[in-house]
Image (cartoon, rainbow, N blue to C red):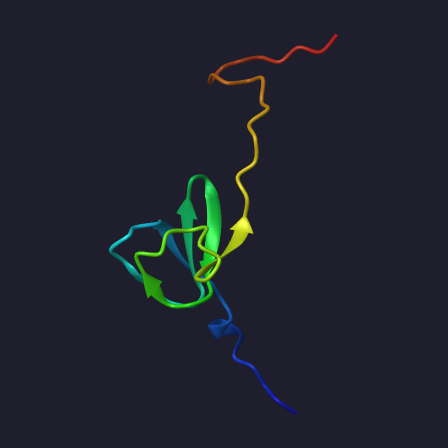
Length: 76
């Protein structure tokens, strides 16, 4: 039976995308509010270039009515 080292099964968060950084497979970056996982090593290929990046989590829309710290929401 095959075994796997679970510690090696993880993504590598790299923060905000930077054009001069060399990214490798499984690196994850943030770009324009969404996160992308690298699927082919590269440098200078900005997400969402589908040759190098796969969308991991899409930026949603902010529908919050509470926009300032201390806002109170009252219903009925």
